[in-house]
Length: 286
Image 1: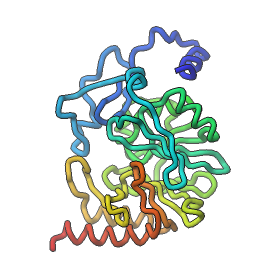
Image 2: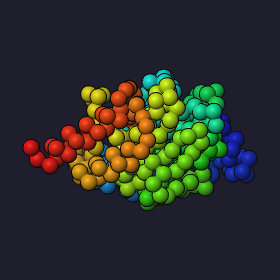
Image 3: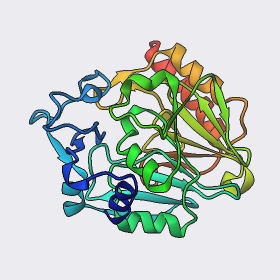
């Protein structure tokens, strides 16, 4: 990519001697430079994720750029960016455009020139914030491309597979951003599981950008909770209560989920309450 080569050359790096940055083909997380593929992917070997049925496989961003393209499009009033054909977990990122600077919520692996140009045309990035480790993807590439910090909760530091000065770890239960936006540690299937409260969202009624910490269901009047979505391991009732309690102080009428059009468009706070009660009723017995 032109911007990456230019950045490296400005730093005096010989671009022809850099070892590859391997990407896990199942979760999409990019690893630190290495002469050969890593022996394993700790993210996928964890019981919340999985190693593909054909075994551990790897790719690189250069390979991915030759077979995939990103699709920027509107999703319930926000600019979404997703990869076609779907890659790894298949989430899409969301660009929150705000007077004080734009925030990229969650991240995807593929970053190419066309995507970088589209984001710059929309005002660039002030920061990137990510809900949990399954979406860490190529976050360092995004940070370097836009000279923007990546905000991650300290409790999930062990799942970072490529370190960089652009990664900023925060602690505690909330982190105030700009224009009233707040990162909320909700927990859920990761200790540092984070959602974003965007008070200007939903035409001023407030919105949560939730990844799959609050998973928008196929019936989009509801959300659900899991310790492992791919392996169907439920979340405990106590942890569900923690998620609900974390977002309770905030006003929101909409929830943006992790995939295209998986959004609770209205009455979202009530949807969280009734969904949590339904979930606990079923995990606790009939």
